[in-house]
Amino acid sequence: MVYQPILDLTDDACHSAEALIRLNDPDLGTIRPDEFIPVAEAEGSIRAVGETVFRQVCAFMASGKATAAGIHYMEVNLSGGQLSQKGLAEELYRITRSYGLTPEMLNLEITESMLLENLPEIRENLEQLRKLGFALSMDDYGTGFSSTRMLNTIPFTLVKLDRSLLEPAVTDENARVVLQYTMQMVARLDKKVLVEGAETVEMVELIRAFGGNYVQGFCYSKPLTEEEFLSFLKRKNPSSKEE
Ligand code: G
Ligand code: G
Ligand code: MN
Image (cartoon, rainbow, N blue to C red):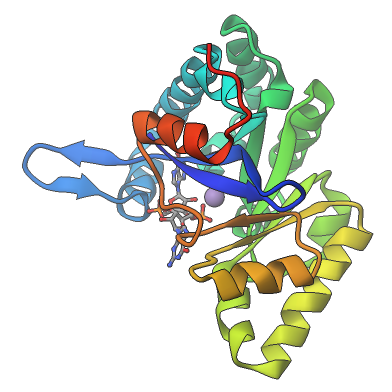
């Protein structure tokens, strides 16, 4: 797993990160999740992959090293195959507790495209996860149908705007209007807003000016290994206590 730091604009510190899987194959090198997650979905190993990911993030959080350096929670991506699994919420809760963690330390990311089928078991899992105390983030908002009904009917606490909303906003006035008012809408719905794909300081400042809560992107940091991430936190969160 690698971790991409998330910048909290309220104090310009890092209190969360997104866990991202990498597959290192001795012959093929690094294979990106875009390539192998669909394969795992198709051949039926996605639940095992998802559980391994979740356990690794839990183990890292349970080490206490990240929390001692100012981390409050981790964002973990769920796949469609996991989300349609009966009893997923109870299973993730059981694993979380077995590491001595609370669900508040884990935010689960779901993309809008997973919700389009509108399967009852997916809705039930999401409602149950929220009831058990996990936070839910809508991922890649702006790439699918940008359905406002999804925002309203599923108890998301954070909405992550896709970088395709940010990129054109730097130069194009109409794109800036779409970004600004999408951000305002999310805020008015009482959800936190994160903008992904900030590659320049100019982009970060645009997000700040539009009232964003969080920023993720290469300008702040690329995804880092556990060790790199901990030393990043020591540099960026200077007041954090080391154990
Ligand atoms: O890190 P990268 O940009 O290569 O990620 C590509 C895609 O793979 C992203 O959409 C991301 O959400 C997804 N992804 C990364 N890690 C995981 C994971 O652990 N589980 C699932 N289901 N998807 C992941
Ligand atoms: O779909 P999801 O949002 O989960 O994907 C996150 C992925 O986006 C990460 O795997 C990361 O590699 C990629 N990413 C993160 N920051 C940036 C950025 O600033 N620019 C670009 N082009 N990609 C980014
Ligand atoms: Mn994600």
